Length: 245
Image (tube, rainbow, N blue to C red; front, side, top):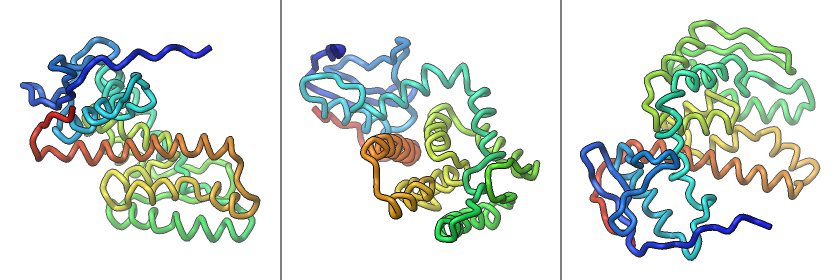
């Protein structure tokens, strides 16, 4: 028997400017995080996204329908204390980036990986001077220390909200290169996600899809795209806070 979800109890939902940033109010009462901290975000755009998903709820408060709220809660409740550890964990993905580990067969998959992944590695090299060593198979290769250091510095300069979004991008895709390309607007979220599942797409084309795998893939895709949208919203501060209820 499932857990009974709490009922919606408010009428009006509003994103509001505060001294610290932007909050979301339900009938004039500010939202709190699970740890009872004020849910205050850096930009109006992100606050409005949170407000809109609360306003869209119908009879029940379903956490699965509050992806931006979930990310903001995690940024506030977890990242402040754990930012250093998260940076170290995410930076390690530069050592084992998905794009560097290529199939040794079949030829069709090898071509597909090259077509999709080579331009991204070229972009990292040409735009940022970041070089990667590629290999066929799963045996690890060492990446240039300068590349590893550069990605660590990139992550270290992020605020807690940016880092939270990057956490979901990198963990979801398995690639810090894809994630940086999305963050910097070189590719959009759909392109980034498709690049991260090149192998799965190729396998589906050969053998068809599996319903259970599709459900899992769709969930991961939604999380990846939500994180990418959060990055965009963190740069969107224009506009006015408005009542969405």
